[in-house]
Structure formats: structure tokens, C-alpha cells
Amino acid sequence: METEKVEVDLSSFHRLLHPKLVVLVTCINPLEGTANIITLAWTTPISHHPPLLLLGMAPKRYSHELIAGPKEFVVNIPTMDIVKEMLFCGRRTGRKHDKFKETGLTPMPAKMVRPPIIKECVAHLECKLHQQISMGDRTLFVGEVLVAYVNEGVFDDKFDLEKVKLIYHAGGDDFATLASEIVTPSLESQS
Ligand SMILES: Cc1cc2nc3c(=O)[nH]c(=O)nc-3n(C[C@H](O)[C@H](O)[C@H](O)COP(=O)(O)O)c2cc1C
Image (cartoon, helix red, strand yellow):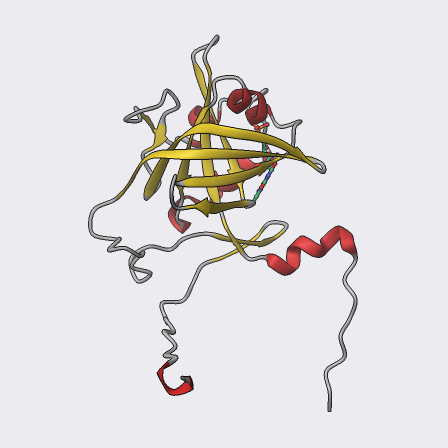
């Protein structure tokens, strides 16, 4: 029997593109000398040369002004070890909460930008703002990656998924991680 195709409400179209990797972006308020953390799922690499990535952020986020102003940020890659802290950073605003203090996550100096990295994350991409584009109800922040680094022993041009349990957002408060089964298809027999 053929499977029926069921129409999805356009308010949920993006959920068909999930689960998506979750990141924690750090940014600073230079006037107050404070740092903030925002949880994002709408991110993607967009260029090798120069190395560029994209964040899709709603203008009302506190972090929006902390990136548009200082023009720098760090993309930190969390693991399932800090899934609860990740959700806190995605459900509370830095206008009212000191997210480092309240989650217990540890800020550490970055190498090339003012926002701190998050010690408990497995990898870090320090970025300066390359371009900011208003698109629909989001701002697209394009960041140029100045330097990227990762915990020793878990990455050899790709993550060792046995060791690193990355977080993927399914929707709402549901998160998943990848099983370690890796599929590497060969195109040899098709040519
Ligand atoms: C899993 C998850 C993914 C999210 N992804 C995004 C996103 O891609 N863009 C966005 O603007 N907000 C996203 N949010 C919402 C923000 O993280 C949330 O509004 C946060 O409280 C904003 O913090 P701030 O006001 O301190 O900047 C996400 C939240 C969660 C829990």
C-alpha cells in the first residue's frame, strides 16, 4: 500500500529540516563587562574561503544587540553532558539572568575575541562579524571564523561519535544524539 503524503502547516516547515545541531553562542556587553550565552539551532557553514558561518537570530534576543554592537562572538559546541544547561540558555534571557552564574558553566578567555569560550563545550569557533543581513523575521549574522579548536582526542577531521555526544534539536524540548553507526556509501559500482 502506498504511503499517503500529509501536508505540514507552514508554521512548522522548519521542523522537517530538524533534528539540527545545537550550539551555544557567547557574546559580550562591553559596557557592563558581562558575557551572555544563547542556544541556537539555526546555524550552518556557508564558505570555505574565507571560512564563514551563518547564525539566524530573532532581533528581539538580548544576544542580538551583543553581536550587532561588539561585532564578535564564539560558537561553542555542547555535548549531552550539559544538555540541561543548554536548555536553560535557550529558555531564559540574559536581560534578566546571568547564564554563566546560574548554569555553573565556566567562562574562559578566548584567543582572538573578547567574548569568552565555554570550558564545558567540546569545540569553539571564534568569529568576527563579517556581514549582517535582515531576512524575513530573522537577522542573518555571517561570522568569519578567525580560529577554531577542539578538545584533544575526539576529532580527526571529523568528530569521533563514540566519544562525543553532540546535541540535536528535534523540536520543542526534545533533543537527540547520534548513534555511533556510521554509513560511508561507495559510488564505485554506480560509475
Ligand atoms: C534548542 C533551541 C534552539 C534555538 N535556536 C534558536 C535560533 O536558531 N535562533 C534564535 O533566534 N533563537 C533560538 N532559540 C531561542 C533562544 O535561545 C532564546 O530565545 C534565548 O532565551 C535568548 O536568549 P537571550 O535573550 O539572552 O539572547 C533556541 C532555543 C532552543 C532551546
